[in-house]
Length: 434
Image (tube, rainbow, N blue to C red):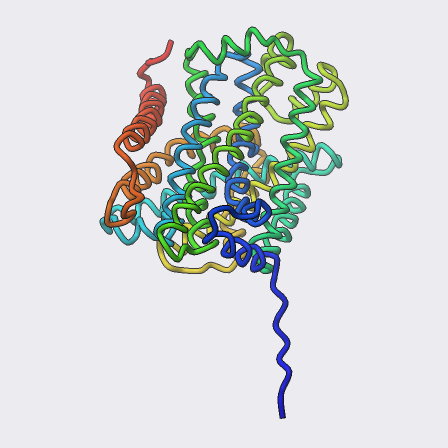
Protein backbone atom coordinates (compact mmCIF):
# COMPACT_ATOMS: atom_id res chain seq x y z
CA UNK A 1 0.00 0.00 0.00
CA UNK A 2 1.46 3.34 -1.06
CA UNK A 3 1.44 6.11 1.49
CA UNK A 4 1.10 9.67 0.29
CA UNK A 5 3.62 11.90 2.04
CA UNK A 6 2.77 15.60 2.02
CA UNK A 7 5.77 17.92 1.99
CA UNK A 8 5.86 20.45 4.77
CA UNK A 9 5.24 23.93 3.33
CA UNK A 10 8.39 26.01 3.16
CA UNK A 11 8.59 29.04 5.40
CA UNK A 12 9.37 32.45 3.90
CA UNK A 13 12.95 32.15 5.16
CA UNK A 14 13.37 28.71 3.55
CA UNK A 15 11.93 29.98 0.26
CA UNK A 16 14.42 32.84 0.26
CA UNK A 17 17.37 30.50 0.84
CA UNK A 18 16.16 28.21 -1.96
CA UNK A 19 15.75 31.09 -4.44
CA UNK A 20 19.18 32.52 -3.62
CA UNK A 21 20.78 29.10 -4.07
CA UNK A 22 19.15 28.89 -7.50
CA UNK A 23 20.83 32.10 -8.73
CA UNK A 24 24.20 31.68 -7.01
CA UNK A 25 25.50 29.46 -9.81
CA UNK A 26 24.21 31.73 -12.57
CA UNK A 27 26.08 34.60 -14.13
CA UNK A 28 23.08 36.81 -13.59
CA UNK A 29 20.41 36.12 -11.05
CA UNK A 30 16.90 37.50 -10.84
CA UNK A 31 16.83 40.65 -8.71
CA UNK A 32 13.97 39.28 -6.60
CA UNK A 33 16.08 36.32 -5.56
CA UNK A 34 18.98 38.57 -4.58
CA UNK A 35 16.54 40.80 -2.71
CA UNK A 36 16.11 37.89 -0.33
CA UNK A 37 19.61 38.52 0.97
CA UNK A 38 18.67 42.01 2.13
CA UNK A 39 18.16 41.96 5.88
CA UNK A 40 21.32 41.82 8.02
CA UNK A 41 22.32 45.35 7.01
CA UNK A 42 18.84 46.65 7.79
CA UNK A 43 18.88 44.97 11.20
CA UNK A 44 22.24 46.42 12.26
CA UNK A 45 21.29 49.87 10.88
CA UNK A 46 19.19 50.24 14.03
CA UNK A 47 22.50 51.04 15.76
CA UNK A 48 22.51 54.41 13.99
CA UNK A 49 19.04 55.32 15.19
CA UNK A 50 18.62 53.95 18.70
CA UNK A 51 17.50 56.19 21.62
CA UNK A 52 21.14 56.73 22.57
CA UNK A 53 21.58 58.53 19.25
CA UNK A 54 18.55 60.66 20.04
CA UNK A 55 20.08 61.83 23.34
CA UNK A 56 23.61 62.53 22.10
CA UNK A 57 22.45 64.13 18.85
CA UNK A 58 19.81 66.34 20.45
CA UNK A 59 22.31 67.64 22.98
CA UNK A 60 24.96 68.09 20.29
CA UNK A 61 22.61 70.05 18.02
CA UNK A 62 21.06 72.14 20.80
CA UNK A 63 24.35 73.12 22.46
CA UNK A 64 26.78 73.25 19.55
CA UNK A 65 24.51 73.74 16.53
CA UNK A 66 26.10 71.97 13.55
CA UNK A 67 29.65 71.87 14.98
CA UNK A 68 29.63 68.13 15.79
CA UNK A 69 28.18 66.93 12.48
CA UNK A 70 31.65 65.80 11.42
CA UNK A 71 31.73 63.40 14.39
CA UNK A 72 28.52 61.72 13.18
CA UNK A 73 29.93 61.34 9.67
CA UNK A 74 33.22 59.94 11.00
CA UNK A 75 31.42 57.52 13.32
CA UNK A 76 29.12 56.43 10.48
CA UNK A 77 32.05 55.76 8.17
CA UNK A 78 33.81 53.69 10.86
CA UNK A 79 30.59 51.76 11.46
CA UNK A 80 30.19 50.94 7.75
CA UNK A 81 33.77 49.67 7.56
CA UNK A 82 33.47 47.42 10.59
CA UNK A 83 30.03 46.11 9.66
CA UNK A 84 31.50 45.09 6.29
CA UNK A 85 34.26 43.22 8.13
CA UNK A 86 31.79 41.59 10.51
CA UNK A 87 29.50 40.41 7.69
CA UNK A 88 32.53 39.11 5.78
CA UNK A 89 33.74 37.16 8.81
CA UNK A 90 30.41 35.34 9.11
CA UNK A 91 30.09 34.58 5.37
CA UNK A 92 33.64 33.31 4.90
CA UNK A 93 34.08 31.28 8.10
CA UNK A 94 30.54 30.17 8.97
CA UNK A 95 31.23 31.38 12.54
CA UNK A 96 30.47 34.62 14.34
CA UNK A 97 32.89 37.02 16.02
CA UNK A 98 32.22 35.70 19.55
CA UNK A 99 32.83 32.07 18.50
CA UNK A 100 36.04 32.90 16.65
CA UNK A 101 37.28 35.03 19.55
CA UNK A 102 36.82 32.04 21.86
CA UNK A 103 38.54 29.73 19.37
CA UNK A 104 41.57 31.90 18.54
CA UNK A 105 42.19 34.33 21.40
CA UNK A 106 44.10 33.40 24.58
CA UNK A 107 41.83 32.19 27.38
CA UNK A 108 43.01 35.07 29.58
CA UNK A 109 41.45 37.52 27.10
CA UNK A 110 38.23 35.65 26.34
CA UNK A 111 36.68 36.08 29.80
CA UNK A 112 37.30 39.87 30.04
CA UNK A 113 36.05 40.26 26.47
CA UNK A 114 32.86 38.35 27.24
CA UNK A 115 32.25 40.31 30.46
CA UNK A 116 32.82 43.62 28.65
CA UNK A 117 30.40 42.49 25.95
CA UNK A 118 27.75 41.68 28.53
CA UNK A 119 28.21 45.11 30.14
CA UNK A 120 27.82 46.67 26.70
CA UNK A 121 24.67 44.61 26.09
CA UNK A 122 23.13 45.86 29.34
CA UNK A 123 24.13 49.45 28.57
CA UNK A 124 22.55 49.05 25.14
CA UNK A 125 19.29 47.69 26.49
CA UNK A 126 19.21 50.46 29.09
CA UNK A 127 19.22 53.08 26.35
CA UNK A 128 16.76 51.26 24.14
CA UNK A 129 14.11 50.35 26.69
CA UNK A 130 14.24 53.73 28.43
CA UNK A 131 13.96 55.55 25.11
CA UNK A 132 10.98 53.53 23.97
CA UNK A 133 9.30 53.80 27.37
CA UNK A 134 9.75 57.59 27.40
CA UNK A 135 8.08 57.81 24.01
CA UNK A 136 5.13 55.66 25.13
CA UNK A 137 4.84 57.65 28.36
CA UNK A 138 4.72 60.98 26.53
CA UNK A 139 2.32 59.73 23.87
CA UNK A 140 -0.14 57.93 26.15
CA UNK A 141 0.37 60.03 29.31
CA UNK A 142 1.28 56.96 31.34
CA UNK A 143 3.69 56.59 34.29
CA UNK A 144 7.19 55.75 33.11
CA UNK A 145 7.26 52.40 34.92
CA UNK A 146 4.01 51.32 33.25
CA UNK A 147 5.37 52.40 29.86
CA UNK A 148 8.57 50.46 30.53
CA UNK A 149 6.59 47.26 31.17
CA UNK A 150 4.54 47.79 27.99
CA UNK A 151 7.64 48.43 25.89
CA UNK A 152 9.35 45.32 27.28
CA UNK A 153 6.25 43.23 26.53
CA UNK A 154 6.08 44.45 22.91
CA UNK A 155 9.76 43.69 22.29
CA UNK A 156 9.34 40.17 23.69
CA UNK A 157 6.34 39.60 21.41
CA UNK A 158 8.33 40.71 18.37
CA UNK A 159 11.23 38.47 19.35
CA UNK A 160 8.89 35.46 19.24
CA UNK A 161 8.60 36.03 15.48
CA UNK A 162 12.10 34.58 15.28
CA UNK A 163 10.55 31.14 15.86
CA UNK A 164 9.06 31.41 12.35
CA UNK A 165 12.41 32.02 10.64
CA UNK A 166 14.56 35.06 10.10
CA UNK A 167 12.34 36.83 7.54
CA UNK A 168 9.28 37.84 9.65
CA UNK A 169 11.55 39.34 12.30
CA UNK A 170 13.64 41.20 9.71
CA UNK A 171 10.55 42.62 8.00
CA UNK A 172 9.20 43.88 11.33
CA UNK A 173 12.50 45.60 12.15
CA UNK A 174 12.64 47.03 8.62
CA UNK A 175 9.16 48.55 9.08
CA UNK A 176 10.21 50.20 12.34
CA UNK A 177 13.45 51.48 10.81
CA UNK A 178 11.46 52.86 7.88
CA UNK A 179 9.16 54.70 10.30
CA UNK A 180 12.18 56.37 11.94
CA UNK A 181 13.64 57.39 8.58
CA UNK A 182 10.38 58.83 7.23
CA UNK A 183 9.70 60.68 10.48
CA UNK A 184 13.07 62.45 10.34
CA UNK A 185 12.79 63.14 6.61
CA UNK A 186 9.53 64.95 7.37
CA UNK A 187 11.08 66.77 10.34
CA UNK A 188 13.88 68.06 8.10
CA UNK A 189 11.23 69.66 5.87
CA UNK A 190 9.46 71.21 8.86
CA UNK A 191 12.54 72.50 10.71
CA UNK A 192 14.47 75.70 9.93
CA UNK A 193 17.84 74.56 8.60
CA UNK A 194 20.85 76.78 7.92
CA UNK A 195 22.55 74.80 5.18
CA UNK A 196 25.63 76.97 5.29
CA UNK A 197 26.09 75.94 8.91
CA UNK A 198 25.57 72.30 7.95
CA UNK A 199 28.37 72.38 5.39
CA UNK A 200 30.64 74.20 7.83
CA UNK A 201 29.94 71.61 10.53
CA UNK A 202 30.88 68.85 8.10
CA UNK A 203 34.09 70.52 6.95
CA UNK A 204 35.39 72.03 10.22
CA UNK A 205 36.68 69.41 12.64
CA UNK A 206 36.58 70.94 16.09
CA UNK A 207 35.62 70.10 19.67
CA UNK A 208 34.67 73.42 21.30
CA UNK A 209 35.05 72.28 24.94
CA UNK A 210 35.24 69.32 27.32
CA UNK A 211 31.49 68.70 27.19
CA UNK A 212 31.69 68.50 23.40
CA UNK A 213 34.34 65.79 23.81
CA UNK A 214 32.02 63.85 26.10
CA UNK A 215 29.25 64.12 23.50
CA UNK A 216 31.64 63.11 20.70
CA UNK A 217 32.60 59.92 22.56
CA UNK A 218 28.91 59.25 23.19
CA UNK A 219 28.13 59.74 19.48
CA UNK A 220 30.82 57.21 18.51
CA UNK A 221 29.53 54.68 21.05
CA UNK A 222 25.91 55.26 19.98
CA UNK A 223 26.74 54.75 16.30
CA UNK A 224 29.34 51.99 15.99
CA UNK A 225 27.73 49.92 18.79
CA UNK A 226 29.91 46.97 19.90
CA UNK A 227 27.02 44.48 20.13
CA UNK A 228 26.19 44.84 16.42
CA UNK A 229 29.74 43.80 15.48
CA UNK A 230 28.96 40.44 17.05
CA UNK A 231 25.43 40.30 15.69
CA UNK A 232 26.18 41.01 12.02
CA UNK A 233 28.59 38.07 11.78
CA UNK A 234 25.93 35.94 13.48
CA UNK A 235 23.27 37.00 10.97
CA UNK A 236 25.43 36.12 7.95
CA UNK A 237 27.22 32.99 9.20
CA UNK A 238 24.53 30.48 8.23
CA UNK A 239 21.99 32.51 6.25
CA UNK A 240 22.98 30.99 2.87
CA UNK A 241 26.10 28.84 3.40
CA UNK A 242 28.43 29.06 0.39
CA UNK A 243 29.25 25.74 -1.30
CA UNK A 244 32.13 27.03 -3.44
CA UNK A 245 34.55 29.93 -3.33
CA UNK A 246 32.79 31.48 -6.32
CA UNK A 247 29.51 31.49 -4.40
CA UNK A 248 31.28 32.95 -1.38
CA UNK A 249 32.67 35.79 -3.51
CA UNK A 250 29.19 36.55 -4.86
CA UNK A 251 27.72 36.61 -1.37
CA UNK A 252 30.48 38.96 -0.18
CA UNK A 253 29.89 41.33 -3.10
CA UNK A 254 26.18 41.50 -2.39
CA UNK A 255 26.76 41.90 1.35
CA UNK A 256 29.14 44.83 0.79
CA UNK A 257 26.55 46.55 -1.38
CA UNK A 258 23.77 45.98 1.12
CA UNK A 259 25.84 47.28 4.02
CA UNK A 260 26.99 50.31 2.04
CA UNK A 261 23.47 51.31 0.96
CA UNK A 262 21.52 50.58 4.15
CA UNK A 263 24.07 52.03 6.55
CA UNK A 264 24.66 55.13 4.43
CA UNK A 265 20.92 55.83 4.53
CA UNK A 266 20.89 55.18 8.27
CA UNK A 267 23.88 57.52 8.69
CA UNK A 268 21.93 60.28 6.94
CA UNK A 269 19.10 59.80 9.46
CA UNK A 270 21.68 60.00 12.25
CA UNK A 271 23.00 63.30 10.85
CA UNK A 272 19.42 64.56 10.38
CA UNK A 273 18.90 64.25 14.14
CA UNK A 274 21.62 66.84 14.79
CA UNK A 275 20.42 69.09 11.96
CA UNK A 276 16.84 69.11 13.27
CA UNK A 277 17.99 69.68 16.87
CA UNK A 278 20.27 72.54 15.79
CA UNK A 279 17.52 74.23 13.80
CA UNK A 280 14.84 73.78 16.44
CA UNK A 281 16.73 74.34 19.70
CA UNK A 282 20.11 76.07 19.35
CA UNK A 283 18.91 79.67 19.19
CA UNK A 284 16.26 79.58 21.92
CA UNK A 285 16.49 76.22 23.75
CA UNK A 286 20.21 75.48 23.86
CA UNK A 287 19.83 74.03 27.37
CA UNK A 288 17.55 71.21 26.20
CA UNK A 289 19.06 67.95 27.44
CA UNK A 290 16.15 65.69 28.42
CA UNK A 291 14.15 63.81 25.79
CA UNK A 292 10.85 64.87 27.36
CA UNK A 293 11.96 68.53 27.33
CA UNK A 294 12.96 68.20 23.68
CA UNK A 295 9.49 66.85 22.84
CA UNK A 296 7.75 69.68 24.70
CA UNK A 297 9.97 72.36 23.13
CA UNK A 298 9.68 70.92 19.63
CA UNK A 299 5.97 71.73 19.31
CA UNK A 300 6.22 75.50 19.99
CA UNK A 301 9.50 75.75 18.03
CA UNK A 302 8.58 73.81 14.89
CA UNK A 303 4.97 72.65 15.19
CA UNK A 304 2.76 69.95 16.67
CA UNK A 305 3.35 67.70 13.66
CA UNK A 306 7.10 67.69 14.29
CA UNK A 307 6.56 66.82 17.96
CA UNK A 308 4.28 63.92 16.99
CA UNK A 309 6.79 62.63 14.45
CA UNK A 310 9.47 62.79 17.13
CA UNK A 311 7.48 60.42 19.35
CA UNK A 312 6.78 58.04 16.46
CA UNK A 313 10.52 57.89 15.73
CA UNK A 314 11.48 57.49 19.40
CA UNK A 315 9.03 54.65 20.08
CA UNK A 316 9.98 52.84 16.84
CA UNK A 317 13.64 53.30 17.75
CA UNK A 318 13.27 51.97 21.28
CA UNK A 319 11.32 48.87 20.26
CA UNK A 320 13.43 47.93 17.22
CA UNK A 321 16.77 48.49 18.93
CA UNK A 322 15.71 46.56 22.02
CA UNK A 323 14.82 43.57 19.82
CA UNK A 324 18.18 43.81 18.05
CA UNK A 325 20.01 44.14 21.38
CA UNK A 326 18.50 40.89 22.64
CA UNK A 327 19.41 39.12 19.39
CA UNK A 328 22.99 40.33 19.81
CA UNK A 329 23.06 39.21 23.44
CA UNK A 330 22.14 35.66 22.40
CA UNK A 331 24.95 35.60 19.82
CA UNK A 332 27.44 36.87 22.41
CA UNK A 333 26.64 34.42 25.19
CA UNK A 334 26.36 31.42 22.83
CA UNK A 335 29.60 32.33 21.09
CA UNK A 336 31.73 32.95 24.17
CA UNK A 337 30.46 30.32 26.60
CA UNK A 338 28.48 27.94 24.32
CA UNK A 339 25.37 28.39 26.41
CA UNK A 340 21.92 29.05 24.93
CA UNK A 341 20.04 31.20 27.40
CA UNK A 342 16.21 31.10 27.46
CA UNK A 343 14.72 34.23 25.93
CA UNK A 344 12.89 35.27 29.09
CA UNK A 345 16.09 35.00 31.16
CA UNK A 346 18.11 36.97 28.59
CA UNK A 347 15.50 39.73 28.56
CA UNK A 348 15.31 39.74 32.36
CA UNK A 349 19.06 40.22 32.78
CA UNK A 350 19.45 42.99 30.21
CA UNK A 351 16.25 44.81 31.27
CA UNK A 352 17.16 44.93 34.97
CA UNK A 353 19.23 48.17 34.80
CA UNK A 354 16.32 49.97 33.09
CA UNK A 355 13.92 49.09 35.90
CA UNK A 356 16.54 50.10 38.50
CA UNK A 357 16.93 53.52 36.85
CA UNK A 358 13.19 54.15 36.69
CA UNK A 359 12.52 52.74 40.17
CA UNK A 360 15.24 54.87 41.78
CA UNK A 361 14.02 58.09 40.17
CA UNK A 362 17.24 58.72 38.24
CA UNK A 363 17.11 60.92 35.15
CA UNK A 364 16.47 58.58 32.21
CA UNK A 365 18.23 60.91 29.78
CA UNK A 366 21.37 61.14 31.91
CA UNK A 367 21.37 57.36 32.24
CA UNK A 368 21.03 57.13 28.45
CA UNK A 369 23.99 59.43 27.85
CA UNK A 370 26.15 57.55 30.36
CA UNK A 371 25.29 54.26 28.65
CA UNK A 372 26.59 55.58 25.34
CA UNK A 373 29.93 56.53 26.91
CA UNK A 374 30.14 53.00 28.37
CA UNK A 375 29.53 51.60 24.89
CA UNK A 376 32.34 53.67 23.44
CA UNK A 377 34.75 52.56 26.17
CA UNK A 378 33.97 48.86 25.53
CA UNK A 379 34.07 49.28 21.74
CA UNK A 380 37.84 48.79 21.08
CA UNK A 381 37.81 45.12 22.20
CA UNK A 382 35.52 43.73 19.46
CA UNK A 383 37.04 46.17 16.94
CA UNK A 384 40.56 44.91 17.62
CA UNK A 385 39.42 41.27 17.53
CA UNK A 386 37.63 41.84 14.22
CA UNK A 387 40.66 43.51 12.61
CA UNK A 388 42.98 40.76 13.82
CA UNK A 389 40.74 37.85 12.75
CA UNK A 390 39.90 39.19 9.28
CA UNK A 391 43.60 39.65 8.58
CA UNK A 392 44.55 36.04 9.36
CA UNK A 393 45.00 33.70 6.39
CA UNK A 394 44.20 30.62 8.49
CA UNK A 395 40.81 32.14 9.34
CA UNK A 396 39.82 33.95 6.13
CA UNK A 397 41.89 32.19 3.46
CA UNK A 398 41.93 34.13 0.19
CA UNK A 399 39.40 36.60 1.58
CA UNK A 400 41.62 38.02 4.31
CA UNK A 401 41.95 41.81 4.45
CA UNK A 402 44.19 43.52 1.96
CA UNK A 403 46.97 45.70 3.36
CA UNK A 404 45.19 48.94 2.42
CA UNK A 405 41.96 47.85 4.15
CA UNK A 406 43.90 46.68 7.19
CA UNK A 407 45.64 50.05 7.50
CA UNK A 408 42.35 51.95 7.30
CA UNK A 409 40.77 49.65 9.90
CA UNK A 410 43.74 50.10 12.26
CA UNK A 411 43.51 53.89 11.89
CA UNK A 412 39.81 53.73 12.77
CA UNK A 413 40.56 51.72 15.92
CA UNK A 414 43.32 54.20 16.81
CA UNK A 415 40.86 57.11 16.44
CA UNK A 416 38.38 55.45 18.83
CA UNK A 417 41.17 54.66 21.31
CA UNK A 418 42.37 58.26 21.16
CA UNK A 419 38.88 59.59 21.86
CA UNK A 420 38.50 57.20 24.79
CA UNK A 421 41.93 58.08 26.20
CA UNK A 422 41.15 61.78 25.95
CA UNK A 423 37.86 61.29 27.77
CA UNK A 424 39.52 59.27 30.56
CA UNK A 425 42.18 61.95 31.01
CA UNK A 426 39.41 64.53 31.21
CA UNK A 427 37.59 62.46 33.86
CA UNK A 428 40.77 62.30 35.97
CA UNK A 429 41.26 66.05 35.82
CA UNK A 430 43.69 66.42 32.90
CA UNK A 431 42.20 69.19 30.76
CA UNK A 432 42.98 68.07 27.24
CA UNK A 433 40.17 70.12 25.68
CA UNK A 434 39.61 73.62 27.03
